[in-house]
Image (cartoon, rainbow, N blue to C red):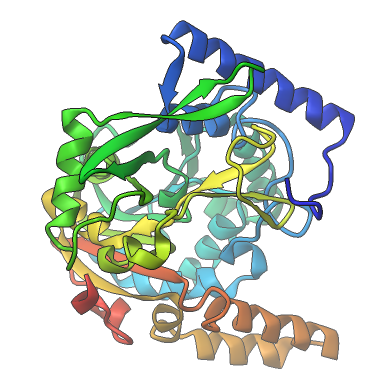
Length: 394
């Protein structure tokens, strides 16, 4: 354990222990070991106990991480610029946001879409967490005008009928449970989680099933050299099915994914021999994924080559791929900054605004680490990707 991690209070530790006991019971019930993807699913989404299902503060300075929408409205305003032409073009346009966070993104996006005369017929938020859904609802009810609020709704699952519009997912892919694998003598083995003699979570490697073995063989076809023995990494074997589930019924419109990640050749480079799996607790990185389940966010970077493959396989055109900085600057970030800067009433407000831009765009912050990928079906969204095209890297 890192010595600079603040210790959870007694209530939080008791909460984590309840989840640890639940996962341990699952391990015993399922033969003594479970795939890491199953562990990650329980740690993040177990009803009432998982990280995203419980009531602890997650976003912002008081939480464990800060997302782009929490910094201010500039991010959402640029996204609105990118999707407004699609919303205006298609019939009965809807916007579907996957994972609504604190509700800040929905608030700022809807307000700016109204400014652009591109208010969707419906703004749906697919949010599996009852706690987060309540927080989003309270925020939007308190801050949105009635004309915008009446189109907002929450979904328990993907849309079940054909629809038109835009799907937006900011920092969603990184929270999907990943399959962890290790290479032994040229063959993939899957990482399982077991209980050691003291009842603590521990790793156990088992030969990969045919599904995982095929997935690893596929990704190796685009790598310059074979994956070396000892490499530990991750693969989202369910990604094609997930993309089809959330976007397959989108008849005419676009999908926009924003997340931290890499093209496949960089994702599986020798410099990442331990993979990208990590945890976050109170804005500090946690290397042990078993530390304080339910209190620690678990995440893995995104293989954007896999996202491109999955989107195209689902029947979409790959419309663009660029860094977050390139995307924001290509969608009127400077204009919105200048407008807000002119409205600032004191130096402190101007400083916060400038810090927002730096965090969103500088290479050492979110600007290059985060990537944006767009897909289109029956519409043209090339206007959203006019700066820094990175598709050649896929």
